[in-house]
Amino acid sequence: MKAIMIIYNQAHSEKVEYMLDKLAIKGYSLWEDVRGRGTKTGVPHLGTHTWPEINKSVLTIIEDDMVDTVLDKVKKIDAINEEVGIRAFVWDILKMV
Image (cartoon, rainbow, N blue to C red; front, side, top):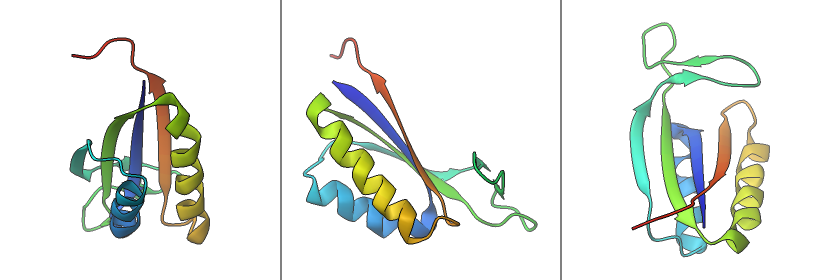
């Protein structure tokens, strides 16, 4: 099993939800109002007057064979508008109850 955390500008919300539905990923946790700075540009997304953009984050646990499919979809979303921002991070799940 693998965990994938996808952090994205809220402008991508519909695309991420659509991706999860199309890939039949039913279980996930969603965090709204995620604040931070992008790794490529360092542009802050802080939800403030100066830096008004804000991110969301979704965490899902999936089978190993789904990882490349999810990452490919995230790359495609990012390619539509790289300035908006979306990133995915993968790590092993050793145990789960």
